[in-house]
Length: 77
Image 1 (cartoon, one colour):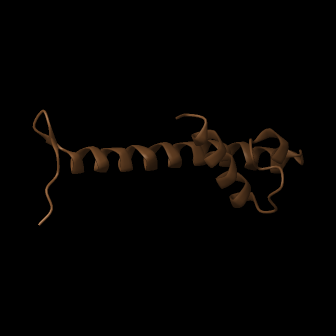
Image 2 (cartoon, one colour; image 1 turned 90 degrees about the horizontal axis):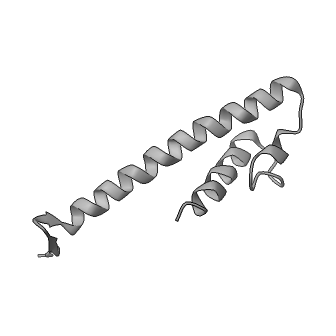
Image 3 (tube, rainbow, N blue to C red; image 1 turned 180 degrees about the vertical axis):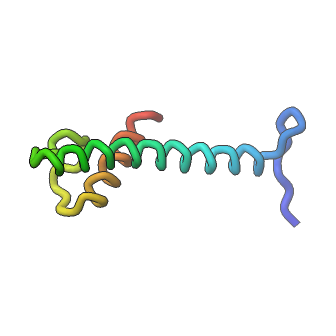
C-alpha cells in the first residue's frame, strides 16, 4: 500500500497527473505550431530547418519538428 503526501487536501498524485496533462497539452500545441511553420517553409521551398531551434541536423520533417519542440520546451523551465 502506498501513501501520497497531502498538501492542503490535494494528493501528490493529483499534482503529478496535472503536470503530465500540462506537459502533453504544451507539447501537442507547440508541435502543431512548429509543424505548420515547417510545412509552410516546405511549400515555399525555403530552408525551414534553420527557422526551428534544434532542427538543423535532422532529416525528416517530423523529426525536425519534434527536436524543435523539445528544444523550445527545455527553455521553459
